[in-house]
Image 1 (cartoon, rainbow, N blue to C red):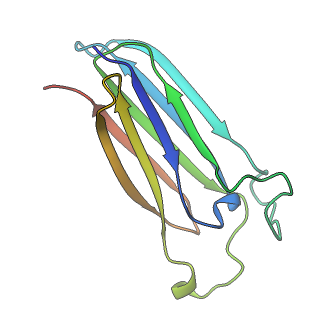
Image 2 (image 1 turned 90 degrees about the horizontal axis):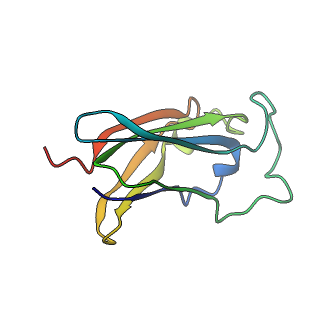
Length: 134
């Protein structure tokens, strides 16, 4: 059994155009839920069409959760655009990287993976049985 620290971050300069929700389900080896955690980074309502990042926006934006002890976690990350890109040029609106990193209580990386997020639709990222030994 281990605790898990889950982090979600991106170096995309227009990350402010997205609301992000991180959900973690900590499970026992038998698949029973031990803990359910979630954290949200909310910027604006969907359809806001902001011209720029809010004044109080931090470019170091990241979401982090730490679980109790368990055998593995299931992770869901929802990336929801509230403001669409300012251009319709497909070449200027390529997918951006969103990094999901999980470290156990021994400070060992369980995963450190980049996911490509569509700038127009956002994404729903599901990673199951992170840290499972089977």
